[in-house]
Length: 141
Image (cartoon, rainbow, N blue to C red; front, side, top):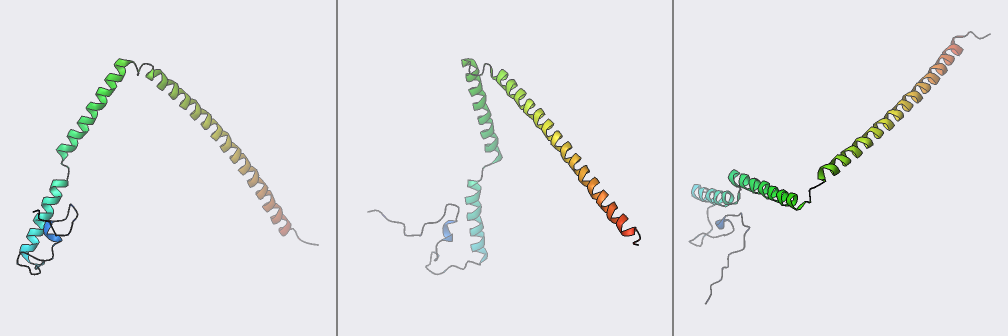
């Protein structure tokens, strides 16, 4: 006959004793005692340390990824899929350079137009202000 576990389910990173409400003697545990705190800390460390990825594993994973890319590139080159890739990249670069030059030229023209319009508006305002000052300073007969 199988025995069933009647303890409530807990998250994977939660200590084993955290979800239980009674200790071994069947009484409510003193959760604030030093022993309970040490056990709790041990459980936390055991569960989190096993889940964390070490630097060694990260380096091995990155190296494996680089090796896989190198092998893929070598296979593609041998089969001829990468022939003409450099020419396509150069054409794309030229297109981008041309678009940038035309955009720069267009922006320069718009900037010059805006400056010219600004100067015209400033001249009109200046002449209006001077006319108003002259009208106020003239003696009335």
